[in-house]
Amino acid sequence: MMTDGEPRAATTLVEAGRAPWSTPAVNPPVWRASTILFESCAVLEAEERNNADGRFYYGRRGTPTQWALAEALTALEPGAEGTILYPSGVAAIAGALLSVLKPGDELLVVDSCYAPTRAFARNILAPMGIATRFYDPLIADPSSLFAADTRAILMESPGSLTFEVQDVPAICAAAKARGVVTLLDNTWATPLLFPAIAAGIDLSILACTKYVVGHSDAMLGSVTAGPGHYAALRRTAQALGQHVGPDDAWLGLRGLRTMGARLKMQGEAALTIARWLEDRPEVARVLHPALPSSPGHAVFERDFKGASGLFSFVLAGGDGSARAALIDGLVHFGIGFSWGGFESLVVPADPASIRSVTQWQAAGPAVRLHIGLEDVDALIADLDGGLSRFRAARDAG
Ligand SMILES: *Cc1c(COP(=O)(O)O)cnc(C)c1O
Figure (tube, rainbow, N blue to C red):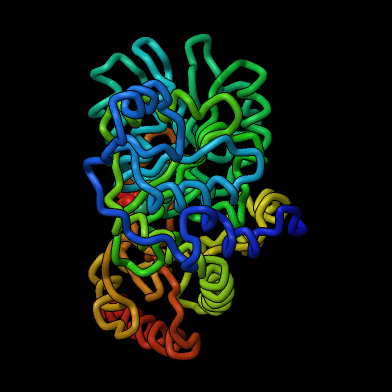
């Protein structure tokens, strides 16, 4: 494991983005604003020419509530230039890609990406004349990936549903040598477990809906830019009219302050449960980057400061209805999308349907778990009952 470098992330998490927007209270108020009033024509004209961050101009440019969150997210990424907020994680992915791509460009996207990323490439980028080529997350020689018209590469590590860890620093080095812009969906790790800009990423994307908000009560996204990439990111977001409501930004800021504590507790509980599942005869495989059997584990050990609370497992045989017998009877795991909140969640995972250049082969259906802040013993007892129901349904069918 990497040792925690400076600036010390726990302290940054508590202090970043507070001054000057919140003084004398601990937290900034929720500034609900569209119109900003100017003292005179001269002030209005000066602000019109200014267009810098942290200037009152018009509600769409934000107020101290949004600025405080953006500044805190920037502070968590050593070397970053700035952060733009978006109304969801998908909007953040779209905003980042549109800030670097133009017609005729090629985009590389990892085959284990979040499914809506694939839909954005197909439904929005392709009709604009931007082609997407998918690549294997476990590619041995990243320099072989790039073509003459490759403009950007979008990584996600670990991958959605299947959790392959990519060699992000090696891909960034190869991309940089060819002038290719590097993007990472860093939602699983957050900057606390993987500081992306320091690893060579140009645009680091978070679905803040997950661990930043942390309480399953708001949608939010962010993109943090490395050197040279902030101006285009900001210009694109402004042109698209991207704006986050101050109430949601405030919820993001509130969640952020405790993200370190939650990630640590949920990450430890998830690893305990992953190890327990690995020993069960009903389970064929556990896909958790901190387990030696998980693809990319050595890179995970080298690059990450720990694991968060989301992972999958593959059942030993059975079909969808045997899996449903497991899932439907769980009492502590809600069945639902999203994750990163304080509560445990479960969904059936079907990676085969969202792959194009790699094959998903498994001994049985897969299940994705998000581990919350409940007692680990209670979660294990719940899963124990679920595996018994699965076994009964599988063996009967
Ligand atoms: C959830 C998620 C997103 C999208 O975030 P929303 O806020 O739901 O739009 C993007 N990437 C990953 C890896 C996610 O898990």
